[in-house]
Length: 282
Image 1 (cartoon, rainbow, N blue to C red):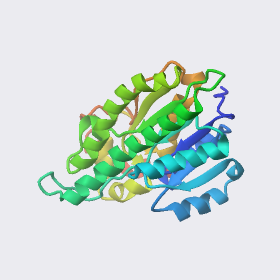
Image 2 (image 1 turned 180 degrees about the horizontal axis):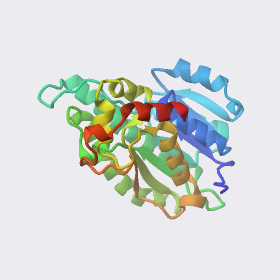
Image 3 (image 1 turned 90 degrees about the vertical axis):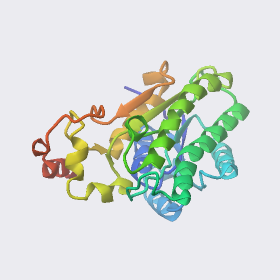
Image 4 (image 1 turned 45 degrees about the horizontal axis):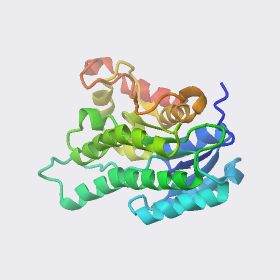
């Protein structure tokens, strides 16, 4: 299927690695132009982008998603380069490694996680909608698309990570609200969220390498496997296309192997080594 993304510009936050990098690769394969933001690992993003065969239709932008002015400036730079931004993916996020109950979490960690995951998404979405309002709808009727990257922690919770869970849960309210607002800017614009479960990324790798972690998390999935970053990215690409998802808005697509928050398998039914080997082969 031709997703008709070759004449579209895609703005992706948190593109320095993990799901963000996979998003860039998948959209690039569809022929889209890319505006990729990074912050702490911006130099890595620049170096990686320079080596891509599609680098001529992409740009790297240094921007801190927690700073509204920086997000507005980044969107403005993308519009100046490409003429407009059609698709925005609010992907940048933070997952603290250490397990801590709410009564143990200090104020700094709590505020930082919410600032990156929730406010970062808010400022990204606001800057995108402002840019869309200035450019106006596309004359061909291909509506803009805004997609948030959530987490199953926002639906089921996550013991020891209440800061992460609540920051992702709030995104559901944003999706439900912004789908009703964005159409006043572009009558065919859509807002959705992709909600990953445990995904093999740099952010999660340390936790997944702890003995027993894979067995514990896969026990809740009918599909006994871990997601790859490109599994999440491909779901976002499909939702971003007016061809494949033109009438899909306000939805949350969970990409988590059928996870439903309850145990499906006994520990002895989960082969962590086989799961790792399959990931290696893929």
